[in-house]
Image 1: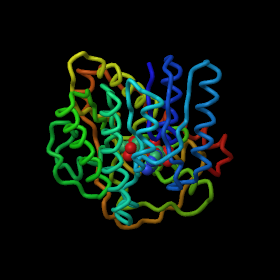
Image 2: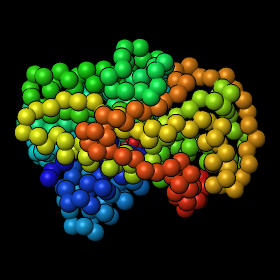
Image 3: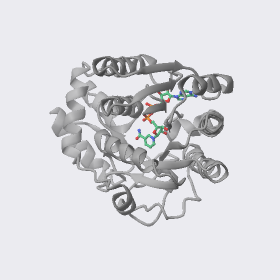
Length: 327
Ligand SMILES: NC(=O)c1ccc[n+]([C@@H]2O[C@H](COP(=O)([O-])OP(=O)(O)OC[C@H]3O[C@@H](n4cnc5c(N)ncnc54)[C@H](O)[C@@H]3O)[C@@H](O)[C@H]2O)c1
């Protein structure tokens, strides 16, 4: 199949591209290689994707450009004529979205609308959208189920992801495109974004500096290992193959939340280091916990994550060391 992945040079995107190539698909990748974090990391990710495509003899085309650029997108869709679009490109991260809400709205809302419109224009029938567990805000009920109300986001990032889901439903309704919105729960593993907790902690721990702990260490996250996420996404690609157009929202998490203080202990163990802790107040926009209810994803997709935090952190640390502990 011919699949177009937006954000394919990023953390999740580059892994997904390699998995899709391995499964025998041909790929187009759209990415603007922006400097939200060091673009050299994204270039390195794409080099690995290229190597995989070369080794397997699959087609891979990289389109460097911005999803806010409508003529660029139209040209990409004309040339690549994808059967499936997996839209991951976004400004990610909760805290920076508070600093720069307009940019988040432009990329995550206008950009998503542009990708949906380009898809419609090119006759695409199958579309996946990367949403986020952050849409649940401070949902008092755990675990978080797709049927829970998500009308009270607490960061601009979360609001744009909820908005993206609404746009997706509208394009499904109006144009009969099969669309799945995937609520990813804190994804980690090799190539994880350097701004995210596990990668940041590894860097700080290795430098010997004190580790900033926001809150009393009891906040928790449903950390999800990248390979489990990829299994979920591949299942969702299959789900969109139904002849009748479908729309749905799926949690892709681990359903085993880990408290911050336990995460730090697991990381200390894996790195063989011990951290000095610097306790700081909870930050605006951060939720207290995330916890995925996977009943629906398991029933409809057969999704079943298997990677325990100790194992996943072990694999992350092995990769981190390979990078020279400076990535
Ligand atoms: N990593 C997580 O824990 C997590 C959790 C929930 C949701 N998500 C979502 O999953 C997706 C991928 O996340 P990630 O962690 O791999 O992030 P990432 O930043 O590594 O990847 C996003 C990619 O999109 C590209 N991009 C950004 N703006 C663009 C634009 N205007 N035009 C073209 N390309 C653009 C970036 O250059 C980057 O390569 C995002 O939509 C994110 O919001 C991630």
